[in-house]
Length: 286
View 1: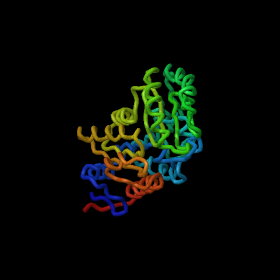
View 2: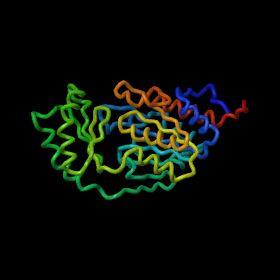
View 3: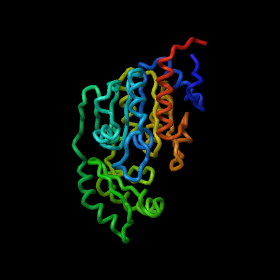
View 4: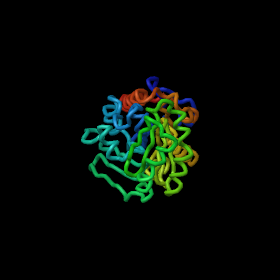
C-alpha cells in the first residue's frame, strides 16, 4: 500500500518504510512526541508555554487510531498535562505523558500520576545555584526554571543569549558534577538533572512494553537526539520507525538525522491531521 499524496514523503528509505507500516498497522504503532518546540511553540517565558491550538484536536483524532501516543518531555508530567490541555479530553484515552525525561508518568485513561522520590543532588543544587549565577556580575535576564526534579537555566531573555549560554556552560557543568547530576543542553537553556533517564530510554521502554509494529518520534531540540538514537537502534533490530524534526533555525542536528522535517509545531499538527486523514480514508491497494 503506497503513501497517500496528502502525506509528506520521508526523504529516506527507512522513513518511507516506517510510514508505510504505520499506515498498514496503526493499531500497533507508538507515536512519541516532544512537548516544547514540537507541540508547543518556544516562548521567552517557559511558564507561558502552551500547546499549539491545533494540538489537542489533532491528537484526539489520531490517538484512537494508533496503539499509543506518548508525550515525552523534560517538564514535570503534571505541568505538561496542564500546559497541553490533555486532561479529560475525549479521544485521548491512549495518551500518556512521560515527564522528567521518563521518570514520571501520567495516564489519560485513569488520570493517575506516578512520581518517584526526588534526587538529593537537586536540593543541594537549588541552594548553590544563585551564587554561581551571581559570579562576575551575573547575567541580567537569566531565568531559572525549577522543575522539581531538575532545574533549567534559560538565557533567551538576556541581551546576548548565545554568549551567556556559552559563558554558563563551564560553571554549570562543574556544579552538576559536584552534586551527581548531568547537564542537558537545549535551545538557549542548560538543564541540570539526575542521570539515568533520557528521552531515548523513556521511548524505548514504552515501545518494548507493548506489541509494537512501528514507532514515530517527533522532536526539535538536542534532548531529542537520544530519542532519535533509540528509534535508529530499534530500526537496526527490525522495528520500522519514522523520525520527524519540528524544524527551527536554532538547532540543526535533528534535521540532519530526520526522515521528515516539518515547520515547527504548526507543521507537527498538520502531520498529525494528515495521518488521521489517511487512516480514516478508505484506500484501495495498488
